[in-house]
Amino acid sequence: MIDFHTHIFPEKIAEKTLKFLASRCHIDPYTDGTAPGLSASTKEAGLEMSVILPVVTKPSQFQSINRFAMQFQEGSLLSFGGIHPDNEDYKEKLKELKHMGFKGIKLHPDYQETFIDDIRYKRIISYASELDLIVSVHAGFDPGYPDCIHCPPQKALDVIRDVQPQKLVLAHMGGFMMWDEVEAYLTGENIWMDTAAVFGHIPEEQFVRIVRAHGADRILFATDSPWGGQKEFAEYFRNLPLPDEEKEAIARGNARKLLGMS
Image (cartoon, rainbow, N blue to C red; front, side, top):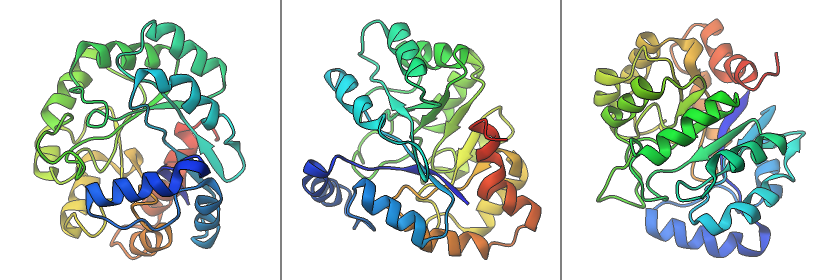
């Protein structure tokens, strides 16, 4: 299995960062938020790989965050790069990330305080698509920003129709805690959805219904570690009422194809 959605922090700030986020989001982490902690969790859960998604919360973090992310490009940990919508010369920065060897980028509309249909995001997603980069986007509700949802399904659909991205992943099954809207607006569109943080929140029958409507070939297993337990999510997933071939695709096959591994 491949976990397509995880987070880590540099060891010198991991403890402080996790305490802050846990307090803000009212959730306890499953790891210590470090690379060794994620590596141990990945191994314990019996996973092949964890994909790390760094979030650039200020334009000035572009270089430091991506230098840190560059350490994880092989083995059981694979990191994407990050970019902020206020970064100037976004084309040059995306080309830099491509040159650095990243297979994709992470955008977080809530933490970056920008709506997904903002022209700055549309430009980034469009050019990332030209560079054949995967774009993973936080979608739906975020407990850290409960008063404003910056990437609801209907706005995401506007981006999909306008930009026509080739490798867009909408996290949290298209929109965390907004799955009725996901069913109304997003199923069947040319996107991937990941399962990060959804198990235990989405009704099982609705999860299966979305898989049926969207296609099992466009769903990616993910946990949102350290906010979701990898071992626990893997066990939950294995017990879902899906055919074995669909489970194999969601657990591993789709991720390998999207990452260019098969």
